[in-house]
Length: 170
Image 1 (cartoon, rainbow, N blue to C red):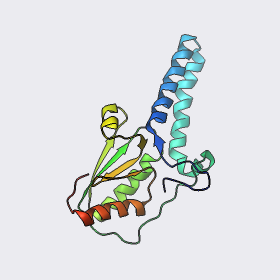
Image 2 (image 1 turned 90 degrees about the vertical axis):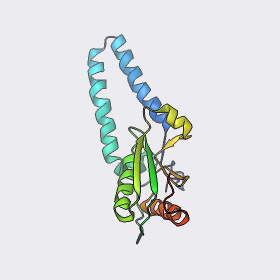
Image 3 (image 1 turned 120 degrees about the vertical axis):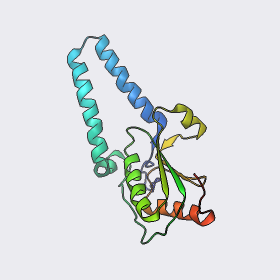
Image 4 (image 1 turned 90 degrees about the horizontal axis):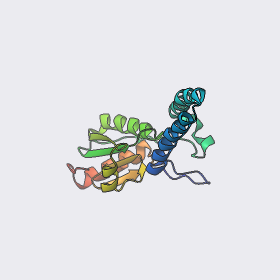
């Protein structure tokens, strides 16, 4: 579900785009302070994070207006136990990351896999060593899903890894 037909953007966040958005935020804040526009500094400090928080909170409802299409989920009819290790890579302020994490946590209760959640926001060396350019990333048994994945896609990846090697680490 991370690639959409009909001209929709891919349902994933590039790490470079997320990092640049925060650098731009700090840059504008610095420029406003340098220009001694204290009202602007106060507004920038309060309004921009509030707007980002609102976007983050209501993203599934507004995603189609931002060009990403609908954020839907296909839930598998039934899943089986899968004792595998799953890694989840996320980046601060990616609106897709908490959606995928919630899906993984729900599946974990049914499938019994181990889940390691890794925030790569302040770990550029990890981004480089794992060759992560977009988030969210779900990794199991050397296989990856990048972007907004449905519960069905996540369960399929985990079940496939479990079928090949029941205790294979991510």
